[in-house]
Length: 371
Image 1 (cartoon, rainbow, N blue to C red):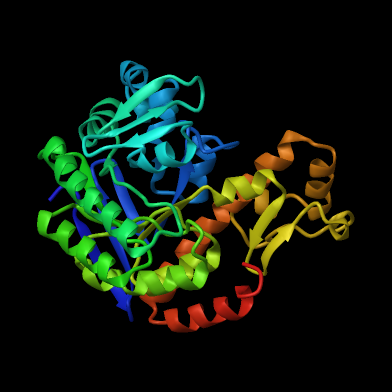
Image 2: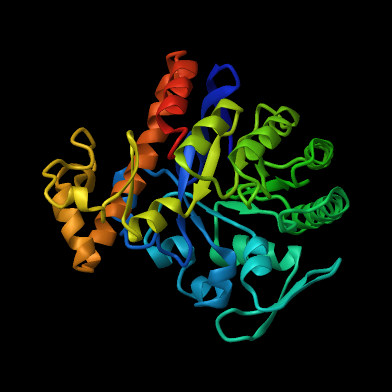
């Protein structure tokens, strides 16, 4: 199998593995930096690679609107276009359609929406999503088109969205076909309802996908409900396929999710936080704009391999943000991206050594209040 998932060690439900792809190996647990518009904001591909990322995420909705998927294809595909030679996972576009578009109308056939950029009308069906992701952008891991019901959703609404997502999963799989060098993931929906999550997972497992994503979380339900819902979902997913929790999250979210058997994550948080002066550290998050850092000569992390974390003082970073210098946003985005990768490596090591429970307990004590 081209996209073989080799499960290496387990410690409780936490697990390490390697997802083998034609463009390289993805060590799990893995965090995917988000390259929304063919760029991880403020960073070069060399910086993202150097931070330790094996894979990044591209955004179908944004790229199909600008510069258009057809143009990216003419220019050699997404990897060539942005200069990233490792694996890329693309989301289906569905979540952004429903959250960003001016007007979105969902039917059995497709989602019709207006661009948030210029108001032009577009139609996104499961078949069109597969064409954009697999054929035009050339992503390595393609996501089915799904419907994520807005939170809070009652049981009936969550069930409706789950069933439509299941039907769209079947259509996505049929349109994707059989490919040797690309993989297709199904997406479990069902809101915060355990029975719907179980049914959604079973429907997807019966269809057979290369991996299984858990969607519809981190949309407002809060940390505790997210963890509870996740605990009701992962047992229904096959152990021999990767599990991907979409759009998550803060460091403590990641650790708690790995404890429940999740393998892959993505989130805009590292670079978004960095642009606003927030640094994520082993001691928790800090706001570099705080006056107490104005004369702090210590770096964010003296032990990090990342230059942004190791080679600049908090005083200098504080000054950059106070002076509205772009370099401050770059350095904090770089630091945060590296920190999230270091967290993944620390979890892989803890699982391999059979020490994940102690790692989890320490992170809970340290981060429960602020992270």
